Amino acid sequence: MDEAVFGYRVVGYHLSWKERRVEGYPFRLDVVLTDVRGLSPGGWGIQSDRLEAEAFLHSPNHWVLAAPHGLTFIRPVGGPVATIGSTLHASFHGSSEGLPRVSFEGLNLRFSTGDHARPFALSAADKVELHLRPGPDHQGAVLFRITHGKVNPLSPLGRMAETGPVNVDLQVFVSRVDPGAGPGWTSWARAWSRVGGVARVTVGQITAGQVRLDAKAGNLSLTNTGQLSGSLDLGIAGAPAALTKLAQSGIISTAAAEAMAKPAQSGRGVMRFRGGRTYLDAVVIGPA
Image (tube, rainbow, N blue to C red; front, side):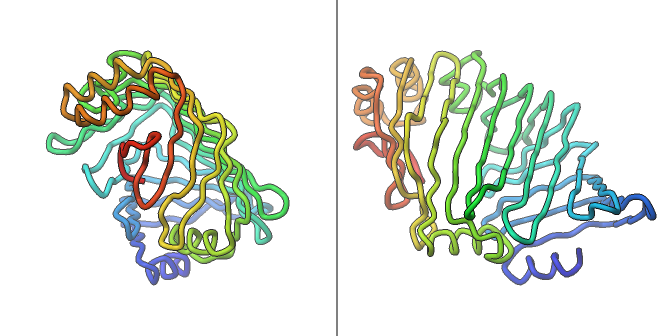
């Protein structure tokens, strides 16, 4: 653990804890950390009062983890978001030959921010899950789901969805993954970009109230400067009214809302990521 912390610190990450306890031998390895904090060079991070991890001694590469007191994820812009739930747990099965097998699951989650923080999109969710699965020939599969999320009415998503539920289903196949690229996201992204790695979106569905986006097909990659590149064919439903609300709230300009109204009314559009920007057809809708 100390070697790993040092390796991440060299490339700009900060990992720390107040107290570490290791026990459970000879049957298990139990590790308990208090006041844990991890921060990436880009300002994203997590912190928790207590993290618990356990592995059987006969399988030291397979760990299960839990945050019994909840955790807080840190945003570089907008402030921290405290997350509590009936269950916050994960598993990690490492391998020296390929991608690790990783799962995260949070049940009955509640999200809250400080008084002066930027509102987070959701106030609650029945379930949030993230899975990474290794495949042959340096491939990997990613599954991310939000089940029955409740919007924060003060956020842009809340103005679009009003009181409707939010559901997300994203499934992506990733090629040319090098698990030995080095510690940290930046090292992995640079190596992936260098060899021409591609993320192929096979399922991409987002519903927020009456608004629904379906990614029909698309390939995404990273430029040599780390920016997202590629395009997604979208099916769009229920968007015109949402665009009007966003323009009335000042979140997007009236001109942008009017320009996006045509693909929204047709029920189809192409989302492109180019030059650090996200486009819906020819309209800039945000950063990439």
